[in-house]
Length: 285
Image (cartoon, rainbow, N blue to C red; front, side, top):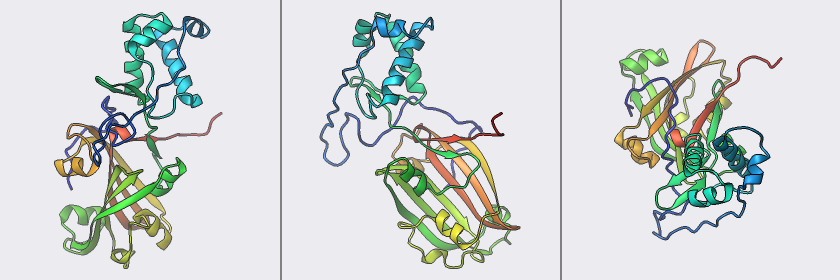
């Protein structure tokens, strides 16, 4: 499942595509979802308490405190621009800048003609770790499920043979799985596996056990390689992820080894609005 080439940067999109939770029509019933509004309002006094920082930054800090404290939980509507202007005493331009920047940073979702809402926190992965996506989703209090789109034996073409250190037309196992977080698709996992190291791979039920978890049970992974790219999805991939064709995506190309043998090569495609990578280097002093 090829993906259009892109630069090796993570792009953030101001258009967050959520399948549910915001006041839009559901794909099943067509009924509007009603979201309660929050009562906490910024005032001139609360902004003045934050010191001499620019007003737009003070307003951003106020909104972030409401989100971080749980006063404004995910999916809840925040005051309108007009209400924020009235309560805070700042200009509409200042309010607009604060909301625009918080949307770009992934803290808010703005829906034209509807309102502005607290964004669902993005799932995230450590940049240098090989983690199980089901565990990552569960750790954040969400439910994981998977749909197997492809699971079969194939012959290695030139590119796959080179990546997996196999001979051309040598047998490999190929799987394509869509992972969901609370019924929202968050990853397409396109994986090729060395049959010698995982001979029973095709017999597994990957709706119950992820390929990552299965392979790590077979033998310890001794090394790995990550290549991260910003890309756009193919039409087929955009349909599987339920995103607009133009939405930026995060692609992780991953190879893992046991000793000197390649265990698997995976393409992990995430919608940019639903995932981020985290990394830390060196020990704090």
